[in-house]
Image 1: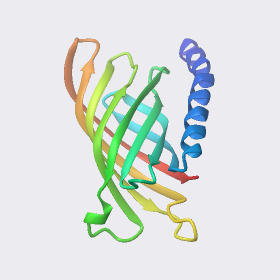
Image 2 (image 1 turned 45 degrees about the horizontal axis):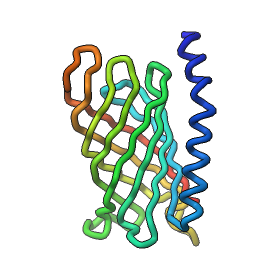
Image 3 (image 1 turned 120 degrees about the horizontal axis):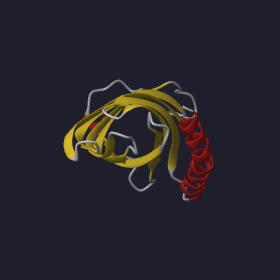
Image 4 (image 1 turned 135 degrees about the vertical axis):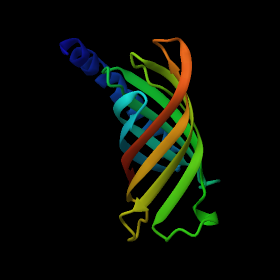
Length: 168
């Protein structure tokens, strides 16, 4: 347990540095940027993490979603998704949104390495004041293929999770 704690503490500084650079870059180019703490459960176990949702002003229905996560083994994993906001083509109420797209993540866990999925997110806007979507909660699900590092083969990979999104 102490070796996992030491490894987790050693990964904090790079995690903070990467997020600071991503936030600074995303904010500098006038994008719609959301910081997304998340808790995921799936093939690779329980994985708390953080993501950014970046919507370029030229195409706000296109979402770039890099993420960092901490595997059950205490190691830092990373990945990302490219999502498309389907909300305008659905009959969802005004404060809900749904997006879908491909996701690739490296869990960096003892049993699971790379995973490639189809991902869907559902969001509910908590704020509808002068800055819509400033605060939102949501759920996500991903299903695809995961590399089993113990058996050196590929298995079905599945992930579900909940998140909170804060828009800058």
